[in-house]
Image 1 (cartoon, rainbow, N blue to C red):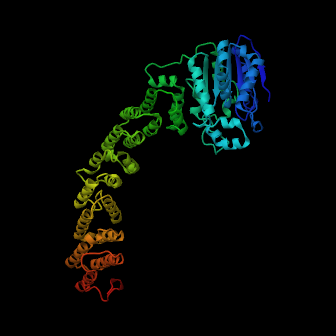
Image 2 (cartoon, rainbow, N blue to C red):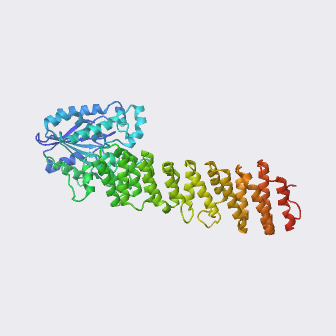
Length: 594
């Protein structure tokens, strides 16, 4: 498809250049399903009847695999010279998708000549992927197989040096004020309706709304309908006409609303304006957006104002914002300043505060961050609920061992005894503590106080879980005698309660099954206690159950070659002799042995 001139216009008036995008052409890009052709609609506007209108076309099909963007820019340069457009006082580029990249590359490449001529430039961008497109990234492997260099150029990636260099060079040119550049950016709202695989807009808002203030997301548009006008009432057409009519003014003076930090920073930073739009639409920022913000030149003070304002205006959840802060800041001081100020506005986000504090520790490995995170942990630990358990399991690492004692006091010294999350946290801390003695002592005090005995208490745990934790305590430098003492104290208390005797033997069986080295220190005492208990409470059913459990214990001891105080056969005989007390047995059960 050849480039065409819709109207020459006056030589002293601006010229409009339509540039289509990737895998398109000068007809299909701008033509609506009803046949309406956007350049023709523009030509019918009376107020710009003296403007020249040109439609630029270039090769961008599968067959144009080796036709590089540099070739397109060179072709555009020659076309503008041949048509005399280069001599116009203002050139206004109306660009869809990759057309915006072509126009920006042209401006950077021809900047010296345009500055010398005093040419004014307008950019009206529709879904132009200033930072690339994630879908082009997906297509890159196929593009490389086909040798299609244009698709490869559109990769949305920090490694896309061509696009990142162009982005930096264009921003420098724009901010230098040597070349007058004004612009308007429009973005699509939805993914293409005909493709259920594509879940997001082809060009993200953070990529499409980057350079100019007051960007707009056009409702009910996708990447392809964004540039097709049904008639002159379409919002995109009306915005373009207004943009054209403003030619010659000073569009760099952005409107501001007094007293609004949010409006001010959005006007000052089009990138933040795009991020603001994304937050309002989805409640968070996409990973691509975070990467762009992280690598941008936006002042951290503006980021702080942006996030605080978003929180105060409830345009985004605290979790969404706090989760992005540390991906943006680059130093510890920046991180703490932003996080602490945000936290001032969100006093009810304990889990998010803890998470950010812990991430500060990990990212910067700074003593101040450790202390700050520990304080958050201390202040809000009691408010935790089960959904916060993952924070315990993944974040205690950040606090130990540098701040071990503070964490211990936070978790362990509670007048009302241990809660479920204190126990979980203690379990997580044990393998990491430099000095586990306070932990072991505290755990023993919990056992001695009976916090693991009553299923109605918050600290109650089944036998298997309790013994796993006791084993971990032992593996973390607790002595055999310490753990044996705690275990025996716990089991003795259970045996004294007629309702808990079988539970006590389950505990004992769990300990023996785990082949603890300290088993020989408690087995004989426990079995002795079982024997005494059964003599005191000769209930037929209880004796039947306990005899089986006790014999199971003895068999496990025998099979595991566990040495106990006293003779194993003697203990077996004493348990068996309980039969004579109850008169329950009419014959000797096979599993009791000889």
